[in-house]
Length: 139
Image (cartoon, rainbow, N blue to C red; front, top):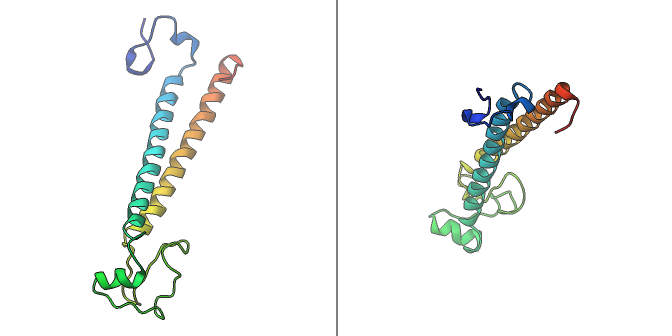
């Protein structure tokens, strides 16, 4: 007897208990969940790395001096690193201490994670509907 379980490693008689297409949805759900968690973790690691470059390292004036930039608080319109989103820590009108890649990575990473979790939930609904249509049971 052939198996429709992932990798073809099912036991005889077990696959008949599952509706057709169940294992394909199960595999897609696993991939979507892994992608969402991986993207979320990677985005958070990058965000924490970006913040750790500045927290506890001195005042903004000292950090600007270390990078050879003059600190002009009248030109730096934001309230500092933890003032909100978008994260910014300007020395003057032309130079910001926060890396350019930090904001896009945070936004894109969050959007990808939300999309992966939404796809997971969509597949979960399809799987539940497939199961209910087969024998009226629930997962």
